[in-house]
Length: 508
Ligand code: N01
Image (cartoon, rainbow, N blue to C red; front, side, top):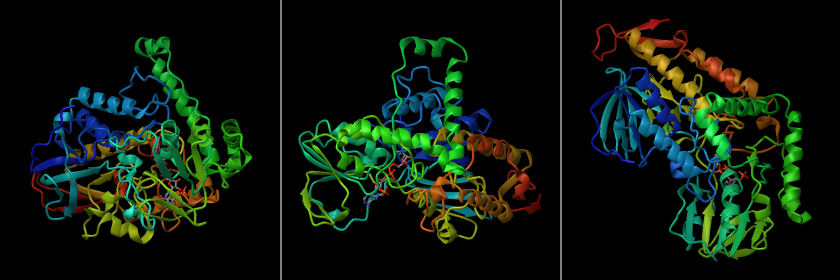
């Protein structure tokens, strides 16, 4: 794909940060709605976001692609029900190419600072490629963009190869090597079965055993794929069936975790099927309620752990030395390569440190007090004309984030329509609206398995608040964001377009 790295325009109506599902989806829908004066910037070299960056062996989506894709861009060519990463990345590149918006994408551009200028009623965004003034700022930077490295004593002095799963080093050949992997989350359980085939020895450092259910994956038959191309509505039918199947998890997650008993039985059966050694079975059996952390899916993870060249270590890491890893029981294991599969900065999003609102404080400053809080996971009091896709409490543990992203994009486009029609220069949610929204979410959180399931997870921030997940059905989210509710906003009207001066505050 051609990458655009030329200089940036001085001013645009809308600046979008990030070219993953969120940024690309926003660009396409802005264009469709007639808001063509936008620019999308991304630090990488192509569209794709997390699906561009996570290239580790075995990377694949754990939501079926019929659902984990844009509703407006069905792909009849998915090779299987759960697509591998290269196919999803190729899909996004293809959608971008066909949509005709790529001429407004600039790659290799990093945001350094974005500050709201009350006088100009615009954002001044300083990037690695120059400064852009924009009326509206949309962040699609996502919660899974910045890898999180573990804070383990000695890790910086490790003398062998070391890399994070999200920054896989394809130049390092693992064949026959002594390898260690730290973490047993969503990425690790996909990597482990792949590399266990070729490494000499693999140490798996497990801090918490995850719940892993069977993965009902299969290749689509030729007939099915032909049907997807030729039979109107067939793909929609698959998508709808998958959507409602996934939605049945919601009551178990948010109201009555006991409903998840069947899932637990299947996950326990998955352990027994893959591992015959009772000691290893015990080691990998979780001690918290299923659903408390993300439920993982794999048919190959447990058999890989049972291989002779794989050891599961649960003693806890005391330190990393230049040659290997020392556990708390004093045992030292030398390795050539250390793979870090310890997740991302989710509740402490890096972009939040770069966006400064009306009073000069960054989003991170504001959130450092009570945790991430926004109105409808999209807008933030004190940050006019800022729209964040996949903001606070928009994440899911059971279904497609693309569905949530499309709901938010629809809301944002609706906001822009109303801003244009009403000659509005800026808007931000009222404090009351944002507080009411947050309080409702956190009241609902109390009965969820994420709060009651007895685990520590990245869903919770340092205050113990779940600021990442959506505690209701996805169709409720879609409904709530169906139209921009300007009556919940403080609006600044512009009396003489197109100047950029502050005019009058309008109470609606
Ligand atoms: O990260 P994780 P991930 N010492 O946070 C352990 C998405 N995703 O990159 O559980 C030792 O799940 C940590 O242990 P514990 C998906 O949303 C999607 O795997 O905290 N261990 C855990 O085992 C997912 O949820 C797909 O005790 C340490 C692991 O590292 C999100 O990305 C595929 C440690 C981190 O697991 C993140 O997944 C892949 C330490 N200091 C990822 N710190 C799809 O298919 C952390 N750990 C859509």
